Length: 261
Image (tube, rainbow, N blue to C red):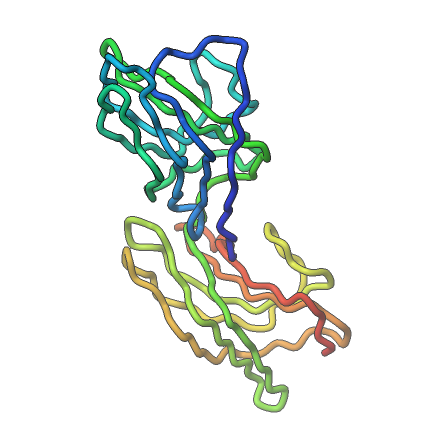
């Protein structure tokens, strides 16, 4: 399943509540998720310390996923990522603040409001010194454990009773050995978009489990072919993993146009 990285900017939302006096976000803010939303690059055009007398404590940039825009006070949501910055001298500033870090993922897939907070260490804890809410909600959810990367193709032979299956890459993010894998080619009456599948299995290929950090590249396999009834179908390539009881679909690549059989 291909996940498209997200790029967006955040806009400042004024609050009727007073923020902690201290360093401020200056200029625009931004975030961009990497492949599979496993990482995120985020920050702002600058951070300044408006005080001419007092230095700041250690600073921290945080990116949050919230149910609703933050309006001041304590923040409640899912902390996606953070990183620290050294404190600023009186009148000091940072320019072009951004960093790429590992991103956490919400347990539930839904729409969230993202909020960038600038934290300062004061009195034994980090407190919000400034923040920006992002204008457009984004859909986030659990990170994909497996991915299939194209190009991919298949070619059946009715006379030979076989089907050739090719795909550029199978990768995973598990920190331990995966379960046994399986590639299966399916024909369905409607485009496949995930979840349980109904249709006709054209062929399948077993694949050995992958170690952490390992991938399959440029796969070319031949499976026994089972032709569907005559008609027009959408063909999809599904990757499944054995979880100890059954094979579960983890990723897929789907054709956008039908094929006549």
